[in-house]
Image (cartoon, rainbow over all chains, first blue to last red; front, top):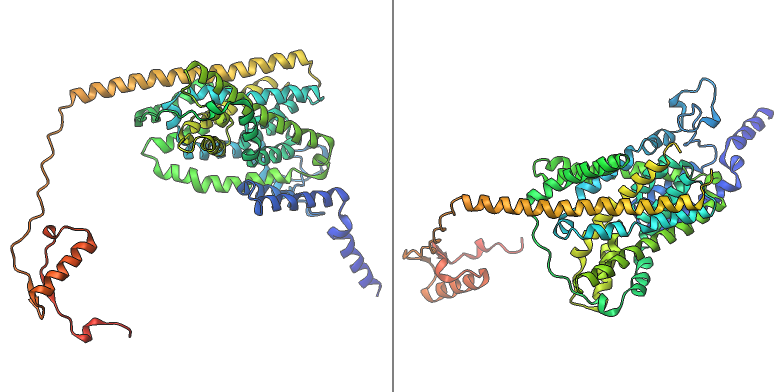
Length: 393
Length: 112
């Protein structure tokens, strides 16, 4: 009888019910809420579903999916004689985030999916993409004022770039302990762009400006499209070497798409590779959200600063759009400036939708795609600059 | 380690200027490159002799071959040809009928 009692007691003590802490319960509830937002409300489901489920897996009591006994990532809980293969499965996959392999591969896929034609047809779009990075630096300053370290502030600021892989890339390098809240904030706000941007666009523009119809873009030749990724990769890497990995992979993917002789590689980068990496990136980023790291004041501040960064980036793009409207004598619709935040193609769609509200015959989508893809380059350059400033600081 | 706000402000201002500068350089390069490429493409187009004018596509030859009518009178055949022409949006003069045959009840198929 005692043996049965011991077995049952051992079973109970080894079970999740006995091991669970209140922080794990809260994190499980948070993961359920994110799953609800992703599945029912369709908030960036391709990313939020893996992130939320990664969060769920990492907070299962006693499962140890993010354990790191050999100190591959975290040197604080070393166990004598432990090997790398004793680590939790998610911890091992997380090496792809920590080493920047996953963000770079995602950029390869983005490059293969992106048509830089509208940008090449209207190169001024690049300035709108640059102006829409202003939120990165505003949020950086505010984070410093709120007492974050420079590395943390830089990682929080990059949320304003509205680019998930870039935010993960920079945070993984500078402030890995903030990876989960920053990734969740970045992807959540990207999903909320149709709600965040329109009031700011309306506030900063007049009805006359919103009605502006832009002339049709010129045809871009195949040669221009092939030379563009090579030139951008070289220029960016020469000026800011630390952005070479992101920009390099982005442009390699685009060259696959445009050169016309690597269709199979382009297809793999766009579909299979991106899907596989998205699963691994999402699950492991979510798995970094343990109760200790997530349930604190910093997370709330990061969420607030992220929203500020998004709003300021939108405002920066729209304000430069207004300047271009004045300089060109009313040929540029300032609404396309809001698409300079790099959430492709959602931000461009918002510019299109808002433009049509005031002029139903207006078609701004292709004009907005220029600043939109310029924002991808802009946010990668901004991340490279911050990495250059604070790596090893 | 905390950072003085003046230092942070300096980094922020330099940061946005660097982003602006790099993207402006790329914009200028794009403009220059597109001009050079278009000039080269024009030059090549001038050097290459203009392709010969395409030969006019011969109109569909309407054969004067008689349509073989099996178990069908000419009036019915004319109606059938007009219907086929209308349904297929092909002018009657471009259609060529070989034969029109009345089918037996056994050949019609239907519900089996």
